[in-house]
Image (tube, rainbow, N blue to C red; front, side):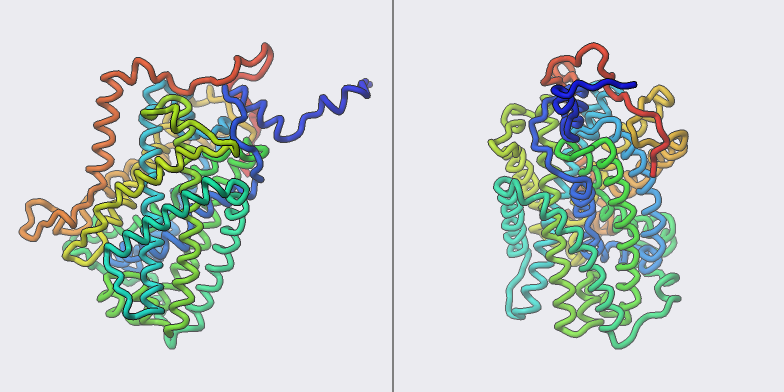
Length: 531
């Protein structure tokens, strides 16, 4: 029979957040960030960053011009399944290692410091690009909305860029001073995306005078890329998959805020894969509604495939305004979440000495907010978007699609490294309470191959005018994703061999070693808990 000590029993029973802090201490860190987020809030940040009200609107034209309805109706569910597999692999990792460093921390612990170094920088540039692309997309749609209400509005590229800077600055302010507001806004964002998407779908069902048939939606091929139809299936169509691959990204945010989440080993893992799953379903419904409403194909083609051209040709002025307004609000909430995720990753990487001036970026204020990481990330996001001030002769926002490509390539290459290292460890990997069991073998292989393939496609030219030896070549059409990502890779490779390898040792403990008998890093229950 068990015995109790009445005077000591209440003190011996830790609160849930104490168990989280103990686990974090086993991983080597003090509880510096405020652990106030619920499991729902953790799910909400990734769901908000994925934001089908953002990606499905801003990159719809990429899929329309590169494949048409086939790229959208079939590309979305097929690519979503691959991304869900990637999400499952990452959920297993975050369950074992619930730290703000997330992906680069996993890579360093499963491999060597060099793995953490490259993963950290790829993840950082990917998050910066996601933040830039989302806020620039929000500025673009805000500009469209203003034009709808004020037809005389002179919304040129300079105006859009100024709106972008204003939105980015506002997101920085919210993240710095809205300490108690962020988690609440994440929760609101979930409901806005659910009910907002439902409202948009209903408008697209009942608003248009006529609709396309299923034959158009599921079989129509469109090639407005400028490339010949002979390469439609193996080149043009895959470029259209950027819609899905870009929209469903940023779900690593569940890991980056795990140090602020209660019961993180389970909550962050579930939040990660569920954010992908529910976004995939909602996004497909939304995109099918767009395609059925696209009865005036010529008008959409003349508008470079942009979603506003579809909306204004299919709906009345008031209904089109309502749809764009819903989207702008969703995109704004998405951008706010992006800044949160970016700042936490920057804080964690700096805490381990991975970024120049680490002591500056790793500081937290009295509210336990990494203020400098917020400001630094937003500043770089603004700088990499400067090419958007120049418009290509095709009329397509090439610079915007280049930034989205940088986001996709940076983030997914960062995902690839720890997934590959986990696959290499095999049965030696000590899982957390949420894990894949034996399924990790085929899932990790699928994830590695899919990421390798998309990373090749999204550094390729989007238009013939981006190919140097073409007569109509122009620099404003160039997809600068390979320049940006390649430049970063060259720089951090040189930096590593010229000095970083002598001082970057991976995650640095900022707490005393665990007492004898405490579980080792990565230890956890080996249960088939992948529910």
